[in-house]
Length: 272
Image (cartoon, rainbow, N blue to C red; front, side, top):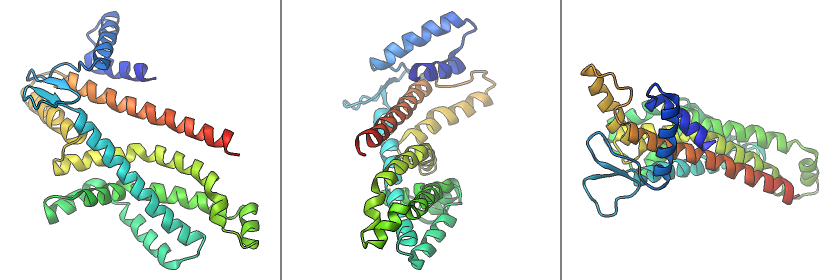
């Protein structure tokens, strides 16, 4: 899957009119990629994963990739647990205040991440990590996607016979929801990951923070705009950089999908 998806991206960017030559070039590029050889930028800077020596002739993308991934997962975790607390209070404990708060946050979540970021940028000119997480969680229905999926799952579970029986016996209904809800939660989080990832990249572009978003903006969008203004016909101004970033994202997506299948299979087969 990784090789096939990467090949599709390589063909879009580097197809030279000869399919066989392009396929051979792709596999040579893949071998070099997994050896840590990502090629060079148009300015002859060596593209590396890390640059511990702080060599100005090298462009390290590893730290930027990890920044984006880390902020994405921190945002998902925060969003998930806030939504979980509000939904449990709303459905299981019938708390009206939690319902009002949940509805307000879901309404705010209908705003696009660009609008939220520009509003915060106009007020503060910068943002802390906490503010960044808040913006990523709210923007482009991110919170709504998690919250609404949780709400439906918890509401359905809460009406199951074994939950009703547990409540009648004075037992804690949440204890009996855990396994089924955990499986649903894994699907929710993994399914929403790309939305949060996209929000983080947009946040990085607007606030010019170190990450894949600003890296693409700086070396791809701005340079490509300049090239087009000079009537150059190149489709991508930094093919090696774009391919390296694309392959990292493809590997991450495939890894997360595989991890999801392994965890769900384990929960369903061995935790009955």
